[in-house]
Length: 90
Image 1 (cartoon, helix red, strand yellow):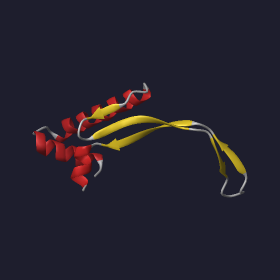
Image 2: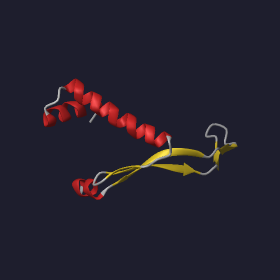
Image 3: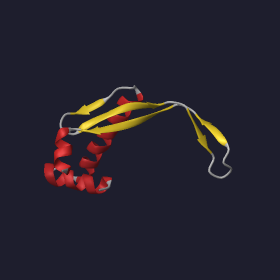
């Protein structure tokens, strides 16, 4: 499901227009992004948790040359599904 399809489904469920539903989805994703940039987790009970995960620096290989390269440490966003989402998928 892509954003326009999600907006249409939210609009049908809530009675909002598709444009307003799209604005709500954009505001929602913007707030999760803002929290992640501050290093904060976002937990939606029953759905899941968006959290910041750190990756340690490590050695890798250049697939073209086979040369060893150093991959620097980085941060990424992880998602852990909550019980409600897990149950819905099962």
